[in-house]
Length: 107
Image (cartoon, rainbow, N blue to C red; front, side, top):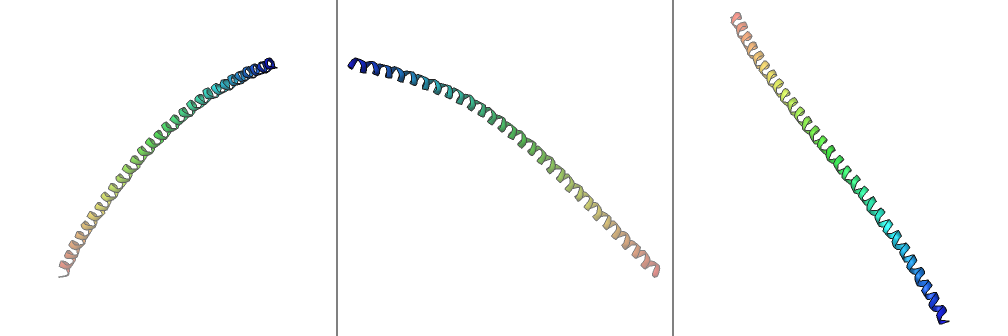
C-alpha cells in the first residue's frame, strides 16, 4: 500500500511539475506580450506627444502672425487717424483764413 501511495505521490508531483511548467510558460508568453503591447503604447504615446508639439508650434506661429497683423492694422489706423487730424487742422486753418478774407471784404 505504501508503495502505491508513494507511486501516486510521485505521479501527482510529476503532474504538478508539468502543470507548473505550463503555467510558467503561459506566464512567460503573457509577459512577453505585455512588453510588446507596452512598447507599442509607448510608441503611440511618443507619436501623440510629437503631434501635440507640432500643433502647439503651429498655433504659436499663427498667434504671432495674427499679433503682428493686428499691430500692423493698429499702426495703419493710427497713421490714418493722424492724417485725418492733420487734414482737419488744415481745413480749420483754411476756414479761418477764408473767414479772415471774408471779414476783410466786408470791411
